[in-house]
Image (cartoon, rainbow, N blue to C red; front, side, top):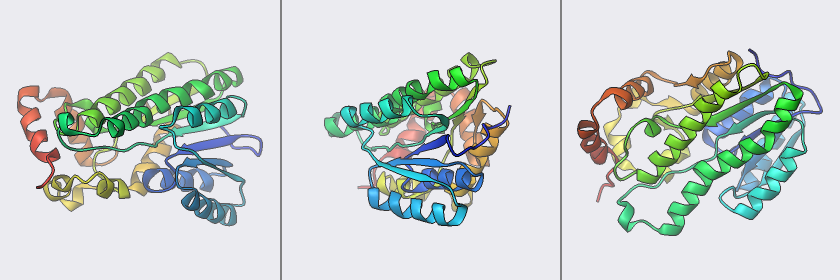
Length: 266
C-alpha cells in the first residue's frame, strides 16, 4: 500500500502543525506535493509556516486556527473536513501534564483528554467515511510509548495515549481491504517545544541526549511508515526499548521507575 497521490483538489490535514512533529509532518507532506490544511491554536505560527511552504513548494496551504480541545470549534472543523476530499489526516495535536492527579487542575486535565483523545476520535470519524467511499486515504495518529505502560505523575497523558495507540492499531486492522490505512506513530523522547512546555525536567535529566530523536526524524519515519502501510512506527532505538519494556516489564517494577522519571523537580 502507498500514500494517496496528491492532487490540487485533495488536502492533507495536519493538526498541531504550529511546531514540533506537526510542523515537520507539514514540511514532509509539502515536499511530496500535498496541498495542506494546517490546524493549531497559534494562527501567527501557522501563517508563517504556510507562507514558507507555499513559496518553497508551490502548493496551496490553508490555515485553520482552532482550539481542538473546544467542542464547538472542533465540531465546526469536523463538519468542514467531512465535506472535503481529505487524502491524508495527521492527528498530531496533543500535550501532557505532570504531577499528582489529585493536585492537578481539573480543567487542564479535561482539556488534555479532549485534545489527546476526543479530538483524535472525532476528526478520524469525520474524514473516514469519505476516504472509504473514495477507496483511498491515509490516517496517522500520534500516540506515544507512554501509552504502553503506567505513568505515575503522568496519568492523564499515559491514559490518553493508550487510547490513541489502541485506536490507531484497531483501525489498521479494521480498514484492511478498503484502500484506506491507519498508522500509529509512537515516539519516545522527541526534541520539541513540547518537552519544555510539559515541565518534566527529570525526563531531560534522566534520558541521555543521544537517545532523543528530532521532530524531523520522527516525521520522516511516520511518512515512510504510512507509505509502506505499516501498523506502527516507533522512531529511535530508545523508543523501541521503551515499547518492549512497556509490554513485558512487570507493572510492579516499571511503575516506581516511571514515578521517579515523571516527578517534578521541586
